Amino acid sequence: MTTLQALIFDVDGTLADTERDGHRVAFNMAFAESGLDWEWSEALYGKLLAVTGGKERIRHYLDNYNTDATLPSDDEADYIAELHKTKTKHYTQLLEQGAIPLRTGVRRLLDEVRQAGLRLAIATTTTPVNVEALLTHTLGAESMDWFEVIAAGDIVPAKKPAPDIYDYALEKMGLPADQCLAFEDSLNGILSSSAANLKTIVTVNGYTKEDDFSQATLVLDNLGEPDKAFNVLAGDAAGASFVNVELLKTLI
Image (cartoon, rainbow, N blue to C red; front, side, top):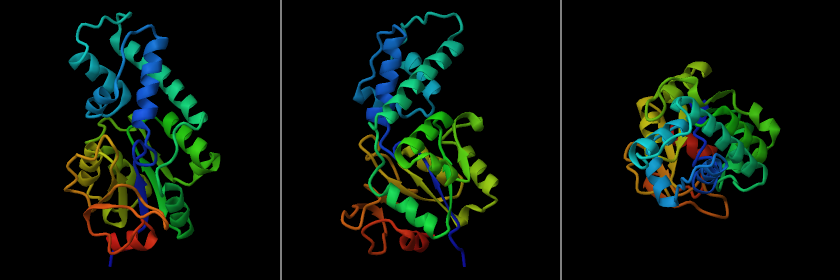
C-alpha cells in the first residue's frame, strides 16, 4: 500500500495569488524605472503567463507583442537579465509591504501537514529570491526551514511545462512520485507535475480557471477552511469541504 510521504508546492498562484497584483505590478514598476514606456495590462499579462520564467516572459513580449521596441543595449540578454533583477527588487518590496497575502487555506494546511510529519518541498520557476521573500513575509523567516528542498528558478535547464523541476525535487528528497502530491494552479504547472508522474491538486485563480486540468487528481477554487468550504471543480473530494491531511492520504 502506497503511503503519502511528501507534498511539493508550486509558488506563484498556488501559495499566493502573486501574478496580477504582484509580478505584473513589479514588471511595470521596473519598466518605468528603466525609462521604458511598456505597460502590461491585466489582459496582456494573462497571455504572457503562457510562458514561464520572468526573463523568458520579457523575451516573449518583445518577440510577439512589442516587435518594434529598441533596447538601450547591444546585449539584449544582459539587458533583459538586469531588467528582471529590477523587477525582482520591486516584487520583494511589495511583499515587504504585505501587498500579497497567502491564498485561503495555505497557512492552515502547512501547519497541519508539518504536525503530521509529512515532508515539504517547493518546485517553481520563480527565482529563489522571490521564494524567500514570499515565505519570509507571509509565514516568517523560520518557514524557509520547513521545506527540505526549494527547487527554484534556473536550477534546471528546462522550465515548466517540462517535468525537470519536479524530477529534481523528487531526486533530492529520494522519494518516488507515487509517495508525493503536487500542488499547482496553471496549465504549465499541471503539465509539468503530470509529466513527473505526480498526482496533483490544482487550485485555480482568475488567470487559470479556464485552463485544461484534465490530468489533475482534484481541481478546486482554493484549499478551503473549516468555516469556508472550497468548491470542487473536478475530481472527487471524498466528501471533504477543505483540504486536510485526511483528504490528502485518501487521494494518494
